[in-house]
Amino acid sequence: MNHHVCRQLTVAIENQPGRLAAIGQTLAAHDINIKDLSINDTVEQGVVRLITSDPVRARELLTAAGLYVIEAEVVVVDLRDIPGMLARVSQALADAGINIQYAYGSEDSVEQKLRLILKVSDVAGTMQVLSNLADDPAA
Figure 1 (cartoon, rainbow, N blue to C red):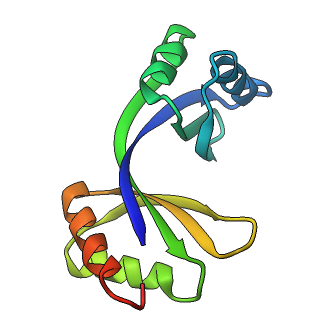
Figure 2 (tube, rainbow, N blue to C red):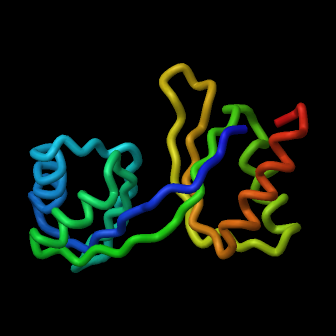
C-alpha cells in the first residue's frame, strides 16, 4: 500500500458555466497537470479540490487570476481494488482516533488500484497507521 503526503489546492468558484474550464486553461497554459480532482457544488458556489504537478506555481497562477485558493496537506493512498480495503483503512484510522474529514478517489483503468485522497485530522498519525497496514501482507 503506497502512501504519501501531497499539497492539495481548494478553489472556490462561482457555480457558472466556464469557471472550471478557466482553471483548467490557466494551468494547462503553464504546463501544470491536474493529477486528482474533486468538485462539489452548492447553489451559488463550487468547491474545486485538486492535486497538481506543481502546487506552488498553480496556487500563484490561480490567485493571480483572482481566485480564492486554500492549501492543505492530504494523504494519497494507493489501495488494491478489492472489496473491504476502504473499510480496512477507515477502521484502522478510526481505531487510532483519526477523523477522515473528507475523501475522494478513482480506480485505474484495469481496476486493480484505487487512488484515494484523504483529508484527515492527523496527517502524521495517518502516515503511521498506513505504514503499519502496509507491513501486513493482506494489504
